[in-house]
Length: 114
Length: 114
Image (cartoon, rainbow over all chains, first blue to last red; front, top):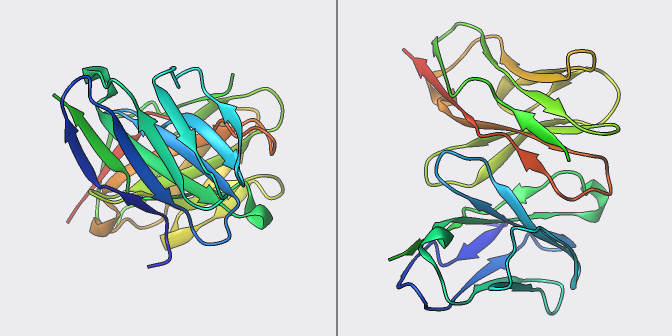
């Protein structure tokens, strides 16, 4: 499968713990996006990378959230001191430079904070 | 900021009948408009997009959408619905090429009954 992959697919954690999610974009896609989706809502933009540079961050991305893409390939999203309100599906998407307006989504990581 | 509205939470149609899923948008400047479909336990799949050109856009699986600038709408259509089209459909808008903050609607659940 050459699509966007995300790991893990499901994560259950206790409030106050730190969690980290990984996204592997489609090979050679230089743009990578993170979104959060809660039940009954559409995805909400969190942040955007072009290669290794984080170029945009939503105000939704609080100080407890940090994203990296150190080598311009895979990306990680870390949430520190998780809260119950962080429970959501975290989606990753990527797009190629030649078709930068179209984003291809991964299956998501479902986070449950107890 | 840009936004989209999907006025119907649920659309029910009979197999073989035409279907329409509605979307209206608000954006400063020229809109980039998208439709995505989400099946259970799977990521969002790209259906079609409008960037410029012909107002009628054709996409995957026999879907099409019509861009109407005066009505600020981008309704998704299909001439003959299939049971397998049953899924959650999301409309999304970006405010131009250099704006990476894509805003999604809340989604419309389409149910096609045999």
